[in-house]
Image (cartoon, rainbow, N blue to C red):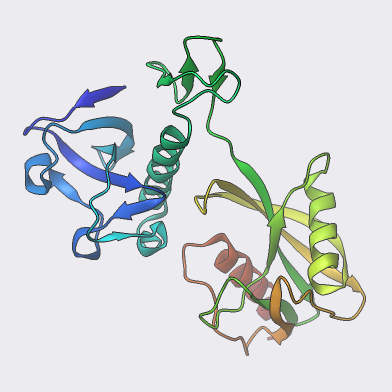
Length: 257
């Protein structure tokens, strides 16, 4: 799976270090390896995009290192491959030594895993399941400004699934903890790999059941019901949050226009 890059190699280049992505000129590198001074680097083939290989290289370019969020406006397939590369780079970086016996580990040649020659333990990249839910009340949707978002964006509620919990239970708990309301008629919509840092978002739509909004100030700066045709600043297109909001708006328009 790993090869040394030569001047003839081409494709998309995911050059990552410590969850950062190399973005020369603000763009994902694409083209011949020699154009980006990548010849001689060890690379992992992590997929194909539009008939061309996608390579992951673990390297700190120091200059022009950014976040995967900067390529979120790319086609969803390419964005997911970029996220995969960043997550794999971090996985290999953080699993150089075995957590059981402390010995040095090496990458598997057949799968995305790290192997310990001493105790034979095998490690795989871990994915944290999350829920994200759009809640509708008549012609309005519940939107909130999260403490981690300082750019004025309002979005739907989300949170991590806890040990021993179903996805449905996680939705009910997170909504209650963050906003103080109860929901009903939960419906699964879709899922999205989310490399911030190693998550899988499972998206739902739900209806308001009862309760008044009482936000958790540790999680939210503000929250409220917004009519479908009078919305605040929203997450960018390509995110599952934006899809949930747009789907809810479409449902409201079908009923109220």
